[in-house]
Length: 238
Image (tube, rainbow, N blue to C red; front, side):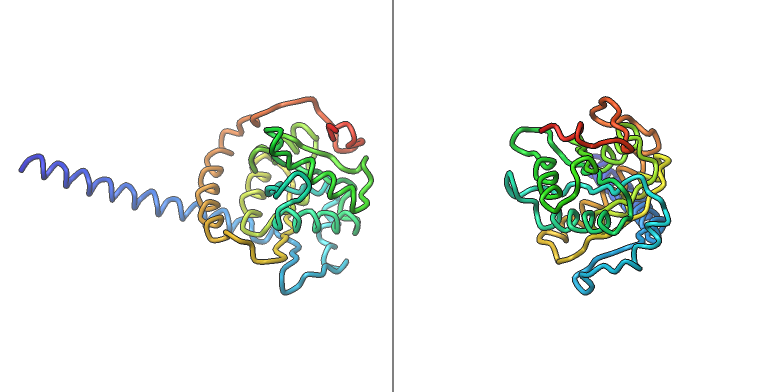
């Protein structure tokens, strides 16, 4: 009987702790979203795929150092995923409309078989963006790493961050906690496969990074400083 009581109390304690953790996690998640929602100043959606110049005025007023496009996977050596393609298209459009003088592409080039940067760089070059205005961060292994390296490696202080809305909240939150001036441009041009699961993972990621930014750890990889104010060609690695 004592063993049964002990097991029952242990299970009850576990359920109570899990409930507390769940409530705390959702509170943090909601706080991050609420804090960053108004910093998404521009959006391209399925319902409104075009972007008029008047909609970028608030972004232009930032006098941003660069437009940061965050990686989102590739289909093969030459093709971005639909999600990444939409981010790149919006980043290019903002550049063409004069929102910022430079594009910073941040993705995962951790292995020879997965080179997001190769795909992102070629896509942007084919769109006609001058090579010297394109900067490549090959070590953007996570959202935190991308934001940290934008400041520490590329010397950017003010940025327009391009990603989908669900991801903007966390990226902007990290940027602010790293003392960056940031605003979001959301690229939601379609309904993406696997989005429900992605949304769930993002809730957990927001909680994780909420605590991570408290210590402001260095990114996984360091490197020589490549000022965003100069030419980006040295960062291409091709």
